[in-house]
Image (cartoon, rainbow, N blue to C red; front, side, top):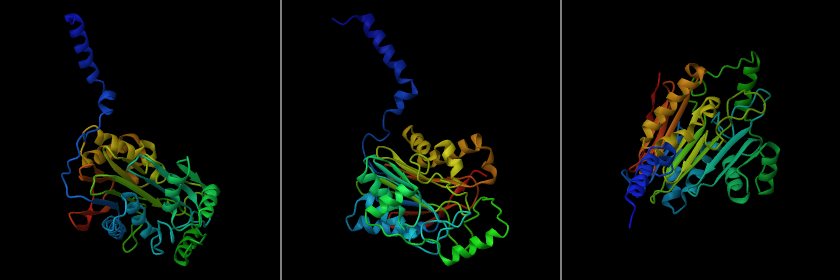
Length: 330
C-alpha cells in the first residue's frame, strides 16, 4: 500500500524541482521534429553570404552532408582575393601579416578550430580536420600550420597587392579605431562570414571564418574560432554565429547564449535580440562598436539582430536566396 504522506511529499518535491531553472534547461525544446519552415534553410552573414549560401545548397542538393555544405559554403569567400576580411586578400595585422581564424561544428556536437594561422587559404578545412582527425578542438599558430602541411595543404602568400597597398596607406598614421561597420564599405564586402545550415532531415551545422580585424595587434584572436563565442550548434535546438567586434562577443559568450535562450523557449529572433541587449548592459563600448548575430532553430525559423544599423545577412529559404537588413538595437 502507498503511504499517503510519502506520496504527497514526493509530489511536492517533484513540483518544487520543476521550478528549478537548471532542470528545465536540461530538456530540449523540440522533442519531436516537426519543421515549420521548408527545409533546407541556410543563413549567413553579410553580402558575401549570397555566394556562400548558393554553394552550400548546391552541396546539399548533390547529396553532400550538412557539414560538407557549411564548409564548402564559406570556402567561397575564403578564396576571394577581393574580400578584405576573409582568407586570401584579408587585411593584415599592423605588422603586415595576414592571420586567419576559423571554426566548424557538426550535428554530432563535434567541433574543430584554428586560430592565428598563416599562409593557408582555407582555414575552415583545417578546422574540420582538427575536428575529425585529432582529440583536440583548437590548434593555433605554428602548430596549426604544421598540422595543415602534414595533411596536404600548401602554403600561399595571402597578402594581395591591394591589401598590401591599403596596409601601407594605414601605416602613414597608424590609427587604430575599428568603428561600427568600418570594414563594410560600399563595394567592399567585409567582415567575418558565419554560415548556418539545417538540412532536409533537420540536422544542423555551422562554420565561421575570418582574417580578423584589419591592422590588429600581432597575435590578436577574436571570437570567430572560439566555440560558444563566434559559433555554436546544438542539434537538439539550433545554431548561432556572430560577426563584428569579437571582443564584445567573447565577453558574453554570445553564440552559446543565443542557443541557450532558444533552448529555454525563445524564438531565434528573440534570442538574438536578448543577447545583443546583454552586450548593451554588460559591455560599455557597445555604443561605438558593431556586433551582429544570426540564428536558426531546429524547425527552420531564423533570426538576426545587431547593435548598430548596417548589418545584413543572406537567407536561403523556400528556394529563394536573398539579402535582408537586420534590425538593430540603436
